[in-house]
Image: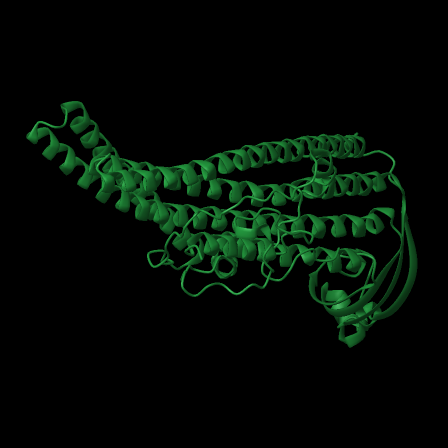
Length: 476
C-alpha cells in the first residue's frame, strides 16, 4: 500500500489549524516567519530531530523493512525452485556375489568390472539438478494477500508511532513553554508581593494598617514562592523529556510573555457531527482495519489447506561408481498431485482458529471507532470550555488592567495607598498566568483533536509555533 505521510512524520491527511490566539483573528500562513525577538526553539525542528533520534521509532522502521520482505518471499513460493546437489557414497554390502554359496567367482575375481561387486565395496559419486514449479497451490496464492496485509499493518504501526512521538514532543514543548512563562510571571508577582508585604508591614508598624492585611500579604508571598518551585520542577521535567526525545535540550529562557490585551481565541471548528464523520480516519482505527484484513487473509490461507496441490518436477542425475553396473544417467519428468484427506483434525482446527481471530479483529475495529469518537467529543468539549474560559480570562485581564490603572490614579490622588496598587498588580499577574495555562491546554486539545481524526500534520506544528510567538510578543 502507498505511504501515507510526509518524510518527517507522515502524520495524516492535510488539514488546517482552526484555533488562533492572535490579535485581529486572522489565521497565520503556514510558512509565516517567526519573530526573531521571541527566540523560541522551533517546534517543527524539534519534532524532526525526535524522528531521527528516537530509538523506538528506529526499531519500527527496521521492522517495516523486515516486513517488506514478506512480499518477495510470498512471490518466491509461486516461482520455480531450482536446486543442485552432490553425493559421495561409500557402501559395504553383503549381496549375491559375496554370500551366495553356489557362486564361484573363478576367473572373474581378477576382472576389474566384477571385483568391486565381489568384495561388496562400492564408492559412488552423484550430482543432481532439480527444478520444481507449483502449478496449483491455493494456499500459496493467498499468501500474497497475507504478505500485503502484513506490510500495511507495519506501515500503519510506524505512522502511529510517528504521530504519537510528535504529540509527545509537542506536549513537552508546551509544558516547557508554559512553565518558563509561569516562572517569568511568578518572578514579577513575587517582586510585587514582596514590596506589598513591606508596605503592609510598614503600615502596621505605623498603626495605619491591620495585622490581617499583613498576614495576607505574607501568605500570598509564600504561595508565590511555592508556585515558583513547582514551576521550576515542571520546567526541568519538560526539558528533560525534550532532551530524551530529541537528544538536545532547548533554551526557553530568552523568550518572554507579551501583552495579552489583544489575544483572542477564534474557534473555527465544525459541528460535532462533522468531526465524528471524520473519526474513521483515526490512525488507530485504520490500523485495526488493516489488522482485520490481515486476520481475514490469514484465515483464507488456512482454508487453502483443504485444497489439493499440483507440482511439476524436472530432474537430471549423473552417477559414477567403481562398479560399472551402478553407473547411470537419469532424466525425469513428473507431476505430483497431493490431496489432503485426513490430518487428525488439524486443518479444521487451524481454519477455525483463523476465523475466530478475524472475528476478534472485527470487534477491535468497533472498539477503536468508539474510542476515536469519544476522543473527538472529549477534545471538542475541552476546546469549547477552553474558549469560554479564555474569553472570560481575557475580560478579567482587561478589567484587572483597568483596576490597576484606577488604583494607580487613586494612589496619586491620595485616595488609595501603595498596598492597593501592588495588590491589583499581583492579581493581574495571577490572571495572566491562568490565561497562559488555559491557552496551552487549548493548543494541546486542538492537536489532540487533529490527531483523533487522522489529520495532524507538520503545518499544524508550525502554526502552533506561530501562535506561541505571538503570545510572546509585546502589544503594538
